[in-house]
Image (cartoon, rainbow, N blue to C red; front, side, top):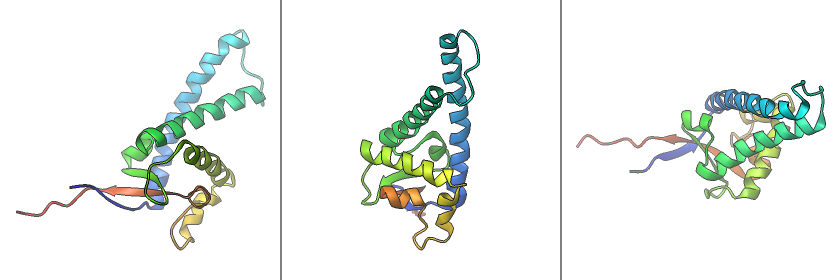
Length: 146
């Protein structure tokens, strides 16, 4: 039996986002520690564009890498979520990068792009719509009593 896919709820998506945020904070800390020898052990100047670009790269590699490899990040796995293209197929590298940058806009607008799913008739976020992707909940198959 295979798992049934249903549209993911806001609660599950936010739970997965929290898990992923914690993982991302740890990755940012490792990246920062790796950069310190390049600055002579000094703190990076606030607003340094190269450092910010590096952090963006770390986040992009994290999300896109997991979406392409398994269709889910660590947080999504914990909350039994999976991301797919609108047609149900796995994401391509282009899909993953597009979804990542669209999600930055959704979250960057004070989370309005994510909360949009509350009023959207199909329960989609801005980045779901703009990238033609969907987040699904994996429901375990129900076995009959036989």
